[in-house]
Length: 103
Image 1: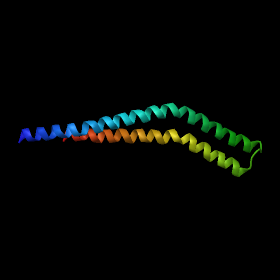
Image 2 (image 1 turned 90 degrees about the horizontal axis):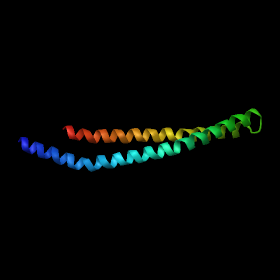
Image 3 (image 1 turned 60 degrees about the vertical axis):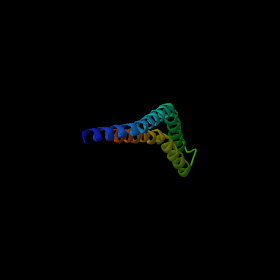
Image 4 (image 1 turned 45 degrees about the vertical axis):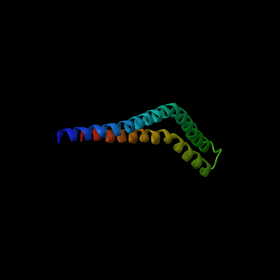
């Protein structure tokens, strides 16, 4: 009985190991893309936000145009935050797959 349980556990580990490796590689790929693009998105979003505020203050644009730029800048600024959440979800998936090993 103990040998069968050991063999079943070994089979589970062998099945989940490639899944864990795939999730791990996906996580590090997303982390790499996140860090490479985060500064670009932050700078672009900041420029849009500053342009919207300053153009409204010096009355170069109407309120609706400034609001559209503010919304666009905020959305662009939040893209790295959403990708960071995806990294957390991928790590959570890897942890859940590793829990199979402790059955």
